[in-house]
Image 1 (cartoon, rainbow, N blue to C red):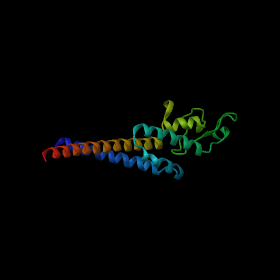
Image 2: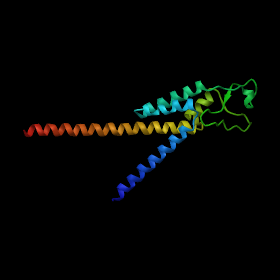
Image 3: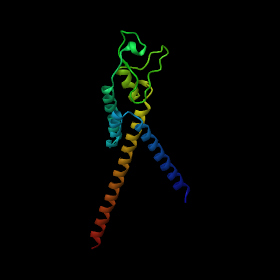
Image 4: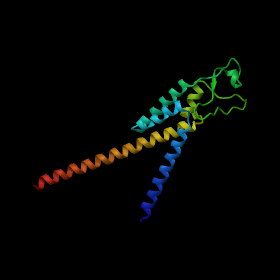
Length: 161
């Protein structure tokens, strides 16, 4: 066995382990959310995966029930807040205010936008979506190349007859 094939096998094994870990993270999400997250498999391109990520984050925000600011340790006149419904985290706040501002803070956390700490569950789902899209692209490319080779072989055979 050559060194290149053993490295390739090791990479494939590590990718499989990473996918299994990501799936395990998704399975820990609440049932309603996990139904939305498992839809990552529909992504056929990198761009689609990112659009899916944004849309899924929006749907999760819509399903989330925020609490009044006073319940979360904030000033009573401040806006609603919520802990992440997927990972349970809130913002890192030195004032003891719990949760994320709703809806914008939660949206940023779910998508990792504006340098926010990306929700580990949504990040795992995005990773699976991107991996799925990459795998589909590789398969389509391989199928296309095989079809092209087959068509060239047919043309050659026709010329020989």
